[in-house]
Image (cartoon, rainbow, N blue to C red; front, side, top):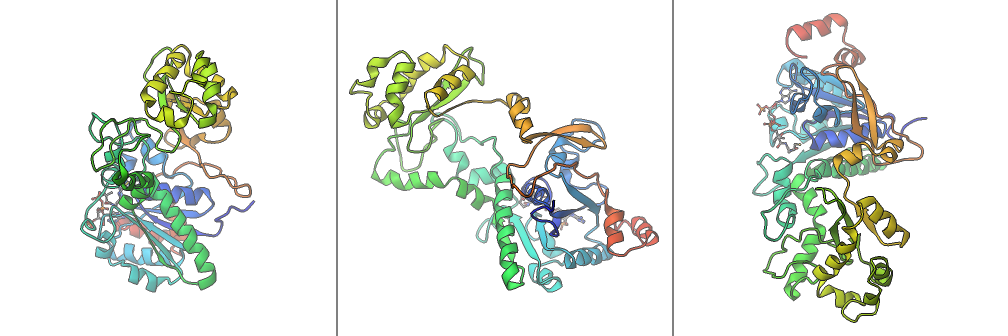
Length: 409
Ligand SMILES: CC(C)(COP(=O)(O)OP(=O)(O)OC[C@H]1O[C@@H](n2cnc3c(N)ncnc32)[C@H](O)[C@@H]1OP(=O)(O)O)[C@@H](O)C(=O)NCCC(=O)NCCS
């Protein structure tokens, strides 16, 4: 069966996480992704956080599945010539170099468009035009400058980064949306276009509800927040749900670091919950029996529920609450997740064969298309497909050997 993006060629000049997370999804959706890497070293993550000596790191292998790898020195004249040939035969190019890097190599957007007017040129940077344009960016810088850090953590603690890589992989997903829209538009215009995504903007988009709350602050305190004092900035709100329905992470038995269950109290479930936790009298108590009444003392409300959750393991708490149709979720550790049979059965935790590592586990594709199933395949070794790809461009074995001698590949 053909994949959704069969026939689409992506020239992947990306590295680290933001770009590779984007191109890995395109590869899973069926595009032929050619990763262009620095000869001798490749993507820096191949050797970062290495767990097995001499083998590509999990950082690299988990972000570069289903791609081909070619090494190419973009600073050599022949490297630029080959890149130009690859641009001519590609539909999409993705890059997340530091500001100005590609321009310095002689590949501005205008020049790329001249080489191939149909190409979609996706560029990920830390920041859009403005005072920060020239700044390099990493995950946590984007979290700091996109609104995530100031709103994450507890009231009495410092700004905190979230474990979800919203600055890198979150930006990568935004880039995928832009690329697919541009491909769709090309089918009617025949023209490519530039797609720009800034990490700060992607994080800000994911912090949309906090900007909602910033505007609500002018009318007074935010009642659903657990905080007692409010200034003129949205405070860190711990584990408050952030939506209209109050929620909290409640301790469970036996009290380990991840023995918690997150519980949401929808208006209609209060009588059921009160009965379940052995406090049926609270169903009709005027201090508890309406969302407005509970809002004034959510700490107390959740502490009463917690007295019940603390007596049971988190999965038992979940079972009991689910049976009563009460929204909840146990806090799953990374060990819980990597060992979860149902995630493995659905292909969300996948075991992949790798030439150097034997096998490694990775997270599968969260986008499921009925007519384009994803088969997760190994990440390529550095330059594994250099001969193959140059051969496709028409170079002979002798020419390729000469390029190797000249340090072009
Ligand atoms: C991530 C980041 C901070 C890394 O910075 P860095 O390690 O200094 O890497 P750069 O992207 O600036 O590139 C460094 C050099 O490698 C060179 N290089 C990379 N691939 C090459 C290749 N195949 N051939 C020749 N040179 C190559 C570049 O040309 C550049 O050289 P120059 O500065 O002399 O022009 C930076 O790339 C960045 O800000 N990217 C945009 C934001 C982003 O995506 N950040 C998140 C990453 S997960």
